[in-house]
Amino acid sequence: MSFAMIRKNLMVSGCLALFAACSAHAEVKIATVDFNRLRAESNQAKAASQILQDEFAPRQRELQQKQKDLQGKQEKLQRDGAVMAEKDRSTLEKDLTKGQRELQSEGEAFQEEVNTRRNEELNKLQGFLVTEIQTFAKTGSYDLVVPTSVAVYSKETLDVTQQVLAYLATRPVTVPATAAKPGAAAKPATPAAKPAATK
View (cartoon, rainbow, N blue to C red):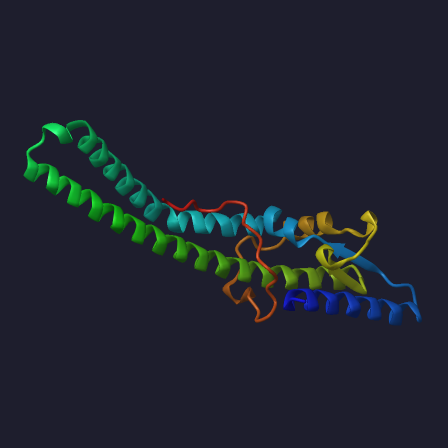
């Protein structure tokens, strides 16, 4: 059994234990929330995605231009290679090979940077969401709020995702850098807009 499955089982067991303990004393107010929807639909998630797009768009355009230039050289070689002087054709072939290697290396480095920054933004967003849901729960006098991903079963009426989204719409759009908390981040979902990697 994987660590993630063990952790999920422990979370479910803990929720059930808390439910049983609270039920013995008073009526319990429980809710579920869909983190995937929050990470995709909240204004904060969209803002984080836009930050990444703005940050990496110039570099992406640069790589796309280099790819276009290489395609032009490739087409020239295919079109004129047979009638070019041996020296010119050899130089063009070397330039093409060197350019392709450099583009591949730069593309891989670019994608790694994108992934690193995306994870940073997702961790910040996750920490922010956890904190805001805690505030939402306290304000609404909830005894327990659990992610839908760990609930074995829950009635649709318990889902407060839409209410949380409405609440988040009243909160700051830009997630503060201090929002990320160690251990608070769940498995990141793909953001709404993902910078495309250049081949």
